Length: 562
Image 1 (cartoon, rainbow, N blue to C red):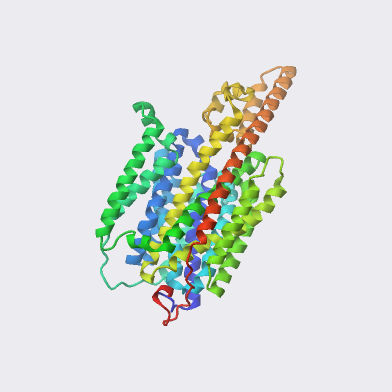
Image 2 (cartoon, helix red, strand yellow):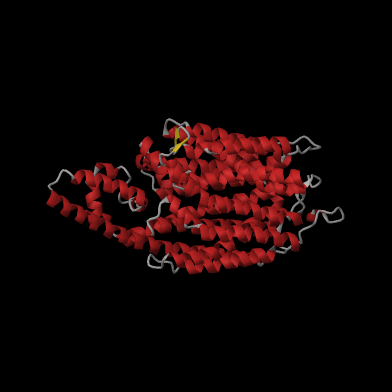
């Protein structure tokens, strides 16, 4: 423990840690806005899924391993390592000359992101007594909320060609921006963060780490972009997508079984199996899993709803989330303060999940005709619910274990929340796809699609039978490009015919936009229903937690409270 450090040093350390965590949170939202430009430059639409999934795999796998290593070697060395890897990945990722290079460096960047995430939440436990952790966990929750808004705005700005000093921005700047912030965070942590000393020589559980990595990697591949990533294998071997997933889940099951066998004999297990004998631990990671899925189901698809219904650009859709982020930041900070004062967390977790559940239920009535005001009111209360729960999950799991186990305990909560988000994206994506395809029917019969199919440039966007492509061509940026190309083609026609053809094309586009928007809204309805169910289940699970009062860190308190 480093509770003895003066407040000034603690604040400096936390600011640097939050700067590193802000990098990770910002990267997840800022980079996605540049994916369209990346596909354009490298002309590699088929490899786009790997750019996202490679980062997801490495960041997921590295979280539990980094958490255990930080308990063994200390947070300082792990944080410095994580920031270094993240900055190097950002630098060379921004310099990539091909899609394969970008995928490689995004995977490396994901390793750094996982290490930073695992330790940023854990280091609070090193610096502060349990009773004090609430306010700092709340501050970190606020950092995530702010990054949610800034990411799309900054990403949209940097992706477009703007001149800053003598340099012209582009999609590569969404990676380069991580470098100066990362260097500053690295220097501050190196100077101010103390080195934790250990009495015994650590023994790394390499076998456990290896089988955990295999299980998590294959699991992510089995549920995220599986069809796109393994399209070549499916077409060349004739294996069905279902058959491939059965094989992959079998591999996951075998890897997990071997992992459990290894952990039973390991002296320093990556994830101690005795943790699962702790009732509260099981309940908290269950809540983390459900919360992660429901959280991504609202944040991600509300952003898409704004883009589709209100024709908002990525930067505009980010601004439209301000009511939610405002509620999230406010409740995170205020909730953290109240938890620190009372030493109680269960009632706040219960209030947060319940409020989020009710808010998502109201989102199920959201339609294209509802208007932004209705959505913004709901988002305020939804943000407040999410903001209360976000920091409490880590605080609750830390309160269950002794100081030397905070890293692995905290990272376990992070791991299950990440898995929940990953499963949620795949699950909700399938629901949305089914809703859109059902609402559109045979896309080949839609006049607008027929017209675009005759345009080779438009066909490069993707397959018009794919729901993601249909949503993409309905976004403002792509519609503007399509309209520009159409204007060039129409100039070759005589004026009377040009006017008639242009009007017909615009009518087709407006009709298609209306059909897609309503089909998308119907799919969103099903997503919000499932999100509300998941968050409701999480609320019920919270009731089963046997709360232990957060300790003040005084020597006379029991080990479980210090």
